[in-house]
Length: 171
Image (cartoon, rainbow, N blue to C red):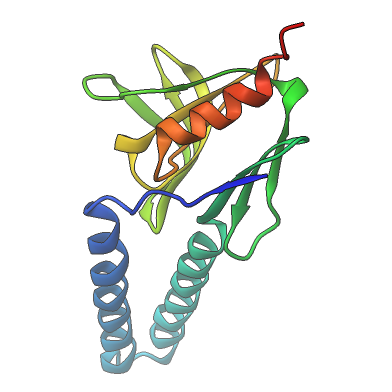
């Protein structure tokens, strides 16, 4: 079994996560306290609680480790159940460079702790992501099922470990 850490987040992720949250909380709390209408106060406090839930949810789904073993690849997350990709569902693995391509987030998170959800790209099609840094992107091509993109800190080592398991022994 090989375990791989996720890549360090891009510079955008900490700014969005650690500067955006306090500013938003201070703004909502200020609006709630200064509002002369009690109903408006409760609305702002409700939005504040909802935002805290979103931030916690994004943190809980962020990748904690990627594991390669005899059963397949497992994407471990910080607090939510892991995603398991069995070998029978994987057709190929490769490092990808998304520089200069148009990648669109269809649904998901972009910048709070990680980039996750459903993305679409003209070269790769539709795929799910659990990426902290697109410069370390590894594409796991699905065999008739969903494809995934992840970002291990050592993309070359991860690809080598997966290819070792994907390729049947010669003989």
